[in-house]
Length: 86
Figure 1: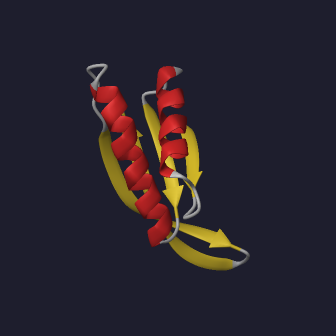
Figure 2: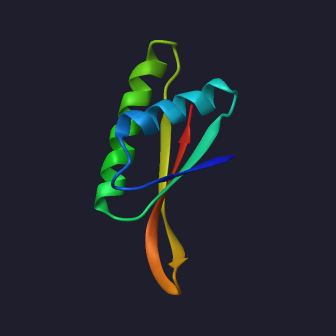
């Protein structure tokens, strides 16, 4: 399973294109990791954009969100993990 790390500065369209490229390679599930509201916002917009393209191909997206613990520079933080299936 591929992992996409999404930042608040990520562009939703670029992330959506990455999702679509991974699905077109045959992957059935992608895991997205994000920390902070801006990153979550860009991720959700990316999934909406990707879904719009997949629906025209007769496919749909399922999202399974969860929390995850991550350590950055010795500091523990809580992030969001979204498993995206198509």
